[in-house]
Length: 252
Image (tube, rainbow, N blue to C red; front, top):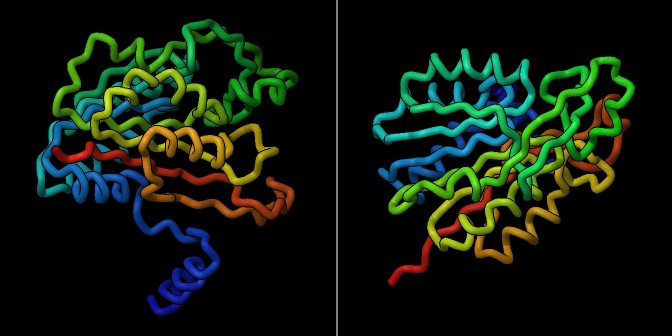
């Protein structure tokens, strides 16, 4: 325990989260409970993959003393991932999960996606990297968050948008301008990088400037992953992290 605490202290001093002691959804829900207690939640799960995030969130809600109604809309365009997502969604007893074989972007479109060797690496932004993967291509459907929520009454609902779409996060955020312009309380959580040459992840500065201009504040940085490993060629930049932006309505 002493060694673990020492390592945590050192990692904090370095600015990295080297030891992951609490899950992403645990940290996020701590923030939600502090800023927006007892609010029904609509959770937009962009880039759901096989459902890792909703499984994590389901566990957090199962252990929570405060019972909150949570509806999740999970979007995953790659067929094999989507099939796994459907199965995992069925096990979530504390979330009303609806699944969609759709990707999120800034416009409705179809896209020919080169399949990556790892299920979590399929990427519109970095598509050319996988052109010679030998795994084939798949035509995926893209829609905007605004399109998908156009029929919803979001009065008194806390909308949380989580985006892990391998470098296409800013485009998905731009597809949510009507939602953002509503002025309601909401949270955006996006996977970003501090390396501008890293096409697999959205660049932090681009996301930060876009969200700040719309009244959001950067509230959390979760799962900070440093770059001192061979896969990332020892680049002196944080490889990726999940950054959380919050906005609260002005009182009165």
